[in-house]
Image 1 (cartoon, rainbow, N blue to C red):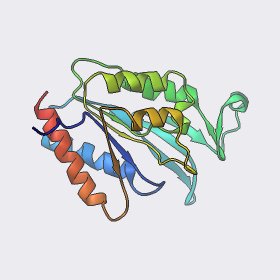
Image 2 (image 1 turned 30 degrees about the vertical axis):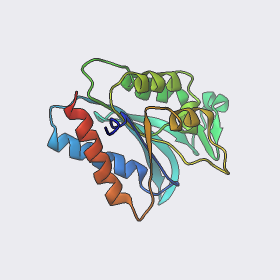
Image 3 (image 1 turned 90 degrees about the vertical axis):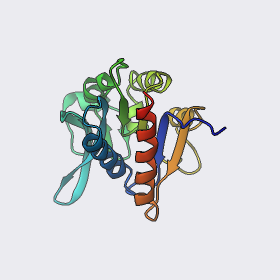
Amino acid sequence: MAAAPSRCLLVTGPPGVGKTTLVMRVFESLRVSHPHLNIRGFYTREVRESGERVGFEVVTLDGRSGPLASSKVSSPESVRWPTVGKYKVDIASLESLAVPELQVKEETDLFIIDEVGKMELFNSAFFPAVMRVIESHIPVLATIPVPKYGRDIPGVARLRNHPGADVFTLNTANRDMMRETICNQLCSLLQKR
């Protein structure tokens, strides 16, 4: 007897390989093929000025957006914000946009979380909300970063090693195949709900 497919699909890979693009293409495919689905979650998108990345924003699947991190912010409150590289992380914006999207509700068919990474984990409410989603038995498609210098972020390691998780490592050669594989696995999960 084959094992049941995992309910938590984690996409990982190096920065810029197309994790967010893959997740958004899967989301769009599901919206077309299963328009009745209640899909909750968010994705992150780069903010660019004159071709240079200056930050990231959080975008909910229903289109609301707000800042996640910026290299250009200089407000008085930003002095206390955590830093990742050259970016100041707006944890209040993350909490007001992303965390409410992770509320487990019976009518939710699928969660999309892009991403569970260092910036997002600075918010103390974020990881517990992610874990409630993972434990809810509602299918999840999420992105996680690859370990940097061989070290994983503790929260990311917990997800990567979760017994209900399947990890898909994305690279430029397998992107199209991975999208199809993940779409098929999610469709199979969603038909059983």
